[in-house]
Length: 146
Image 1 (cartoon, rainbow, N blue to C red):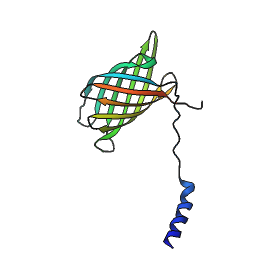
Image 2: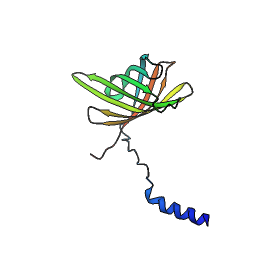
Image 3: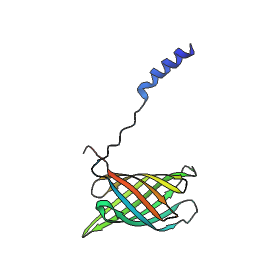
Image 4: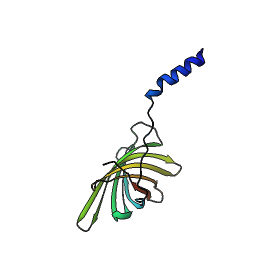
């Protein structure tokens, strides 16, 4: 009887399940972004600010600023927000950065979604090595149906 009840419950709740949407990336848009950490700072021992500069594929020289927080008090993982900007000639491009991080050994792994002033959205996955003072990312355009 309990087996039948479980089956009925499973099929009864199935319409309420949500499948994850696939993130569609433009396979021709991938580029590497490599940065050097210029400074880090904390005023409270819980939230950390990082600034970095480096080369980011078609955007050239890019300057980044991040704030890392742990609002859920998870210890080895949390969230971040940030800003980026670059200038090529007279054209200035900016971006807002947001995502999550996970500490993995001596590295921090980042997974992010970025909104750019040129109207693009980027998915970025990368590593931060605070000892080596490096940030490396693989970045791609997100395909939107606009």
